[in-house]
Image 1: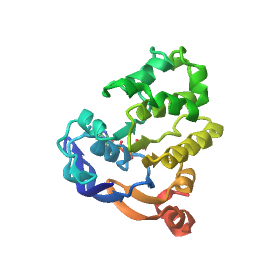
Image 2: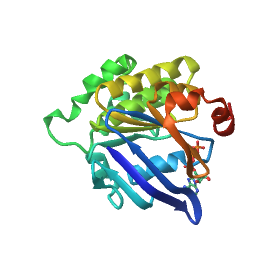
Image 3: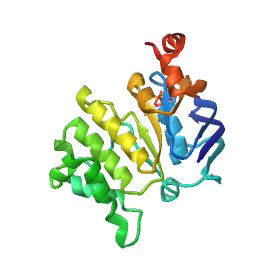
Image 4: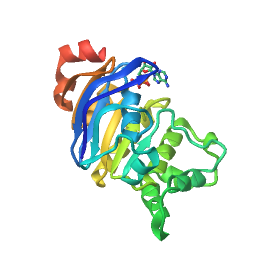
Length: 232
Ligand code: ATP
């Protein structure tokens, strides 16, 4: 479904990604893991059209490079950004509705039902301002907003960040449910054990390069790999 080949990206000369190649097949959860500054967010932003890149990025056979971000969203690619980036003063409902901004047609708000089924807490807090939600609820809202674009491919950038451990499992369980509903997932996570537990395959990113890839279960089980790359 998604293919990157030899993708590089730089910020004013600083190379954040170097020769990254990866693939995601329809129906998979693929995790990208690595230390702070490894380039994980840059990788997701490259796919979403938020940073300039070299190399090939194809979604369902179509090149995404040089497409503006809103066109990439319309193709069915959506991202839950690091730090959630909600509209803090707007209500839960308005944050969700804004997720459907780029869509047209009578059914544009239809995904609300799905969002409320996944995250009943949001349905109970519709008129509450986003800034008054807990960290976990804010993450649910950010995921819900991304689902309002009706994506076929969902990218999540560290959804467990700033969340109580008890809710991390809820969030990651929701990611699995989203995949089971037919949405392919590319997940960036610092919580390696939890991310590898729900992923089918994983890539390890280190200073902008893929240093390892394979079945998530193999990577999670390999002690040498865990010590060398994952700091466990
Ligand atoms: P984290 O887990 O801390 O978010 P990351 O793996 O997502 O890290 P990136 O955020 O992609 O890593 O950053 C990769 C490199 O690019 C780092 O050296 C970072 O300092 C640098 N970088 C990221 N964004 C910018 C920017 N807007 N301008 C300049 N340098 C940047």
